Amino acid sequence: WQNMTVQQLADSMGKDTDHVFECMLYIKGHNTDKYEEEDSIIDNIEVTKEIVNKTGLRFKFEEQGNKEAEQDMDAYPRPPADPSLLVKRPPVVTIMGHVDHGKTTLLDSLRSSNVVDSEFGGITQHIGAFSVHLPDTNERITFIDTPGHAAFSTMRSRGAHVTDMVVLVVAADDGVMEQTKESIKYCNQAGVPIIVAINKVDKQEADVARAKQDLLVAGVHLEEFGGEIQAVEVSAKTGFNLIALQEAIIAQADILDLKSDVTGPVEAVVLESSTHAGRGKLSTALIQMGTLRKGMYLVAGTAWAKVRGMFTERGDTVQEAPPGDAVEIIGWRELPSAGSQILQVDSENRVKEVIAWRKKQQEKLKSKQDIAEIQKKESEHQ
Ligand code: GTP
Ligand code: MG
Image (cartoon, rainbow, N blue to C red; front, top):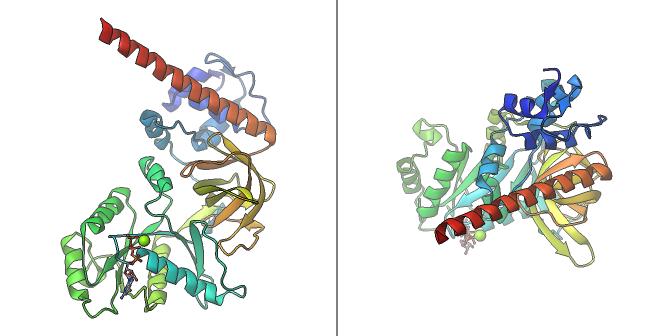
């Protein structure tokens, strides 16, 4: 371990040297400037350990459009967090299903059922995610309401799953359709558990038994047929059984035993970004690790923020956002792109270093691609 070169360390981790260099940017309190070349000897054992154990496995950077780099990035295992630091967090839920089966109506009903309880009542702004409190318990659920969204395809292509489970909406008058099957396929591939919401049961034409039969044929093994998947009959329109649906989600969350490290550096994902007249650059972020607070420095791709404030969908200011929460963040100097990973860094200096590094990487990548392009053209000429 001691006195390895950057190259040797990278080799021993099965990663390339760029990974090691980027890791160094996240190491606090060490002067890592002296390890700038591939044959620099890392003579500080603590630096080596930290690269290998902690930050080394945590960092990620985006190289847009570079599939190879994305795959490599996905190969990074997350370090096992200290179990004593893990705290229960709310489940993050996405709604999927066929066109017109009632996804938007269901989200609206869930959202407004929650807003009614609120003393502020009413004015919700769209931030791409909202949180629901179950009556008489402390249980909370975070819903993401952008299933077909660009952020999702970016995250999907990276194999990064922001969602803990999917509520699959199947209209009882229509049964399993093309996009229902696609959603099932996606969940199975991604290993994301499904809860079925059999919707529109208020309709005359509703045929719940047939919908369940369809699901069975599509490989969705419902509890009542000896499988493991819960199905709840609901009406998004009348609000019938929505509490039962939320309870099913909490039951599934308990099985998944969802916990996160609330201490340590913040990691989050950008769900949406926009520029707002008067309020400036905003993004909605889903917090995955750590607790976000005002004043923190964040990097997402080559964009960065010093957090000036955080808001819920109802426009309430929050002082901190733990894992499982989605909040709107203000303070971005540049807009981060949807789907990109947010990492907390120590200081504005670190921000500058990380961004400079990432830009350099992007340029390197681009010149590699340019060279490949020229070589290709030349060989075509001959
Ligand atoms: P896309 O976004 O186009 O894929 O559709 P969606 O899945 O979001 O469906 P949406 O919520 O827009 O609902 C489609 C239609 O079904 C609307 O006219 C809704 O009013 C109606 N609808 C949704 N849920 C129910 C329900 O529980 N009962 C009845 N009767 N109608 C419903
Ligand atoms: Mg819709």
